[in-house]
Image (tube, rainbow, N blue to C red; front, side, top):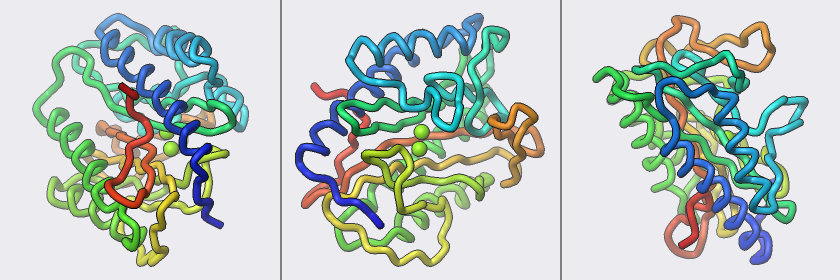
Length: 250
Ligand code: MG
Ligand code: MG
């Protein structure tokens, strides 16, 4: 069952998304060698609470933090920790959720720590491009496979691995709603309709597709330990252009 959002829900989702975007603005500003992922988590928590929202991830299925912080070969769901100190040349994917007035915004971004290698720059650029290629398909009458295919095309062109076990999802009153969105074509002909909101989130790897769940039962890493990037926006299908919900309202 795919929910179509009411005007009031959309208003709240935009505010939730605005708060998520404020967190990302701050992450971009403060991420540098020497900072711990726990410090990032504390700052994210503070910004979300100051804006009268709730950090959606905190307590979600028992998750212990407000952000997911996934470093280098970690793909998603990394747990912030004071012992994880970022170093020059690392990358860190920060995934943030905020619930405002019962509605959720969900967005992830992968940040370079200081100067990163050329191949990592290529990974970041391509994964961001894949996200926007997916967003460019978010029009009424298109199908889910159009989004998946647009992402897959960028990944294949750049010869990047595509994470198969995780993907995008409907978002709204709950963080994870129907439909599930694969980051490669599976033949899903579900039609996009005005009022649908989907979190589009390509996860691409410099190496192979395969990932493994770590012993902490949260962190997902690449099997070959090569770096992985993750970019995500919550996006609404409108009667016109796709509306990115997880951006700062100016
Ligand atoms: Mg997310
Ligand atoms: Mg998501």
